[in-house]
Length: 155
Image (tube, rainbow, N blue to C red; front, side, top):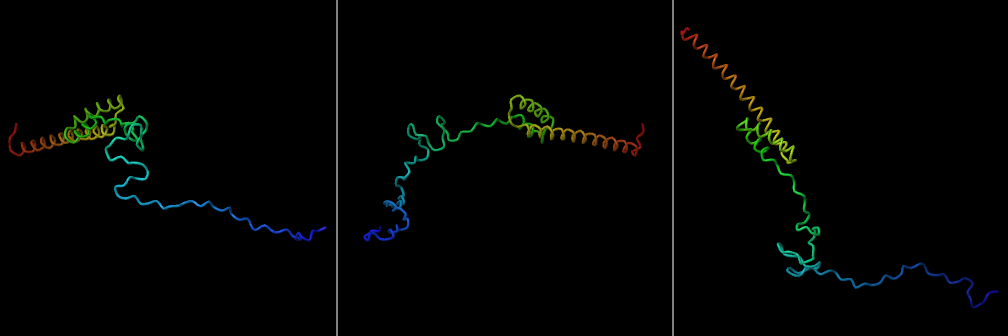
């Protein structure tokens, strides 16, 4: 039945233990000395070209500049002239503003807002000038008529 040399209950296995972690030679990274070579490769001094075949960080292959963007469309020169001349010669602002809008529509340049601002300010300036002339002539002729009637000169 039972063997006297064997215990009645088998020996219990000890609780599951974690396998021993391998020991690595862990060293803290040394702080680089001033002027010493950088640990992550050599860094090029400012303004030097990278070695042949090496692409600097942030560049596309075949691109001489990092992250090159497409240039923005130019601003129409007549639109700028229209806005500037609106404060001095309103008629020139209106003329150059209309020409600028036609060029912007045809070429796709920037400056539509500048041309519109030059046109609006130019037309307001022309209207103010015409209103000033009308008021000035009205006052001039009314004063002339009043002074002629009071001076005793009769026609």
